[in-house]
Image 1: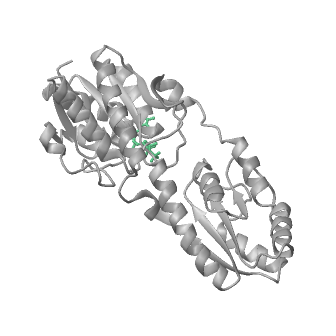
Image 2: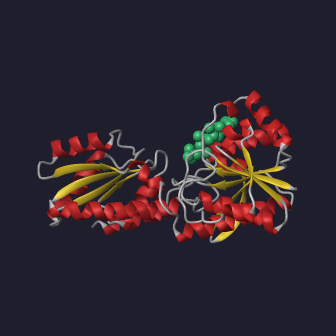
Image 3: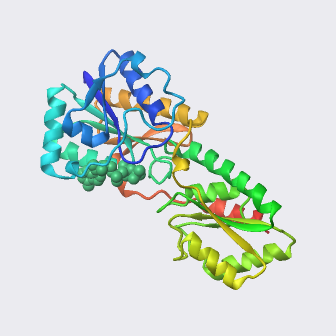
Length: 324
Ligand code: ATP
């Protein structure tokens, strides 16, 4: 392998820049060339490449988002689109890919490898932490810190006005952010996609909390929670059933994806980038780099895509104990 291309794809997350930097610097260390592909698969199809040297990636380890930009590409989902991408890579003399993204991006890379035999390595970059084969995806730790900080601020106003707040956090399919922030910020209840606690339990828990003398409460709601109601409907439901509470809703939205990456994410990105390039140089392909038991390990990409990242049931128990 003489030339590696690196790109970011799907939703952006803090730490992606640090991972690009690591891939570029590892290539420089082993004296092989590296190019950046702008705008994910879309830029790959259009041949939007830029040579990157160790110096091109200065001053980005601390920046959120991705300087290579990210995009979603419908054209790459077609055989013709992927052929165009292949031709563009061959014209640029690229002979291996490092894709930083989520499972959609990995699926695209697997199909591309199957069709053209192109070596690919994945680095998991998404705040949702919903990828099998790693305890932490890039950006997850930063997002947790961002969200916990927001919830702390909401708590200040909640307790000043004796209010109940429903705070919606990201997580359509995975409740990792909601569960961890719920425990970290001391939420009364946590509603996640993995568990259906039922609306009765929510009311019962809020009643109990009121009786125990609490004047304000926070309920963390993951976007994809299983109550069948969105946060605004939940507010109406609780107000209809519990007159004692004045309810407010806060939807945190895209701010959760932004910001300077935490030290943890920067270190993780640096470790993952090194492993991705070194694995390619060892002749490996079709793997995702992940963190398991504090070791950087490889998981077959196919398994990473198909497997499900499990919610931490022990943490659910801890949360239950904390709210008694
Ligand atoms: P996030 O976790 O933020 O959603 P993701 O990587 O899962 O990130 P997707 O939008 O699912 O994001 O996928 C990113 C891109 O990967 C798509 O726009 C598409 O170009 C490519 N891709 C996804 N699935 C496939 C597929 N089945 N075949 C070919 N390409 C795909």
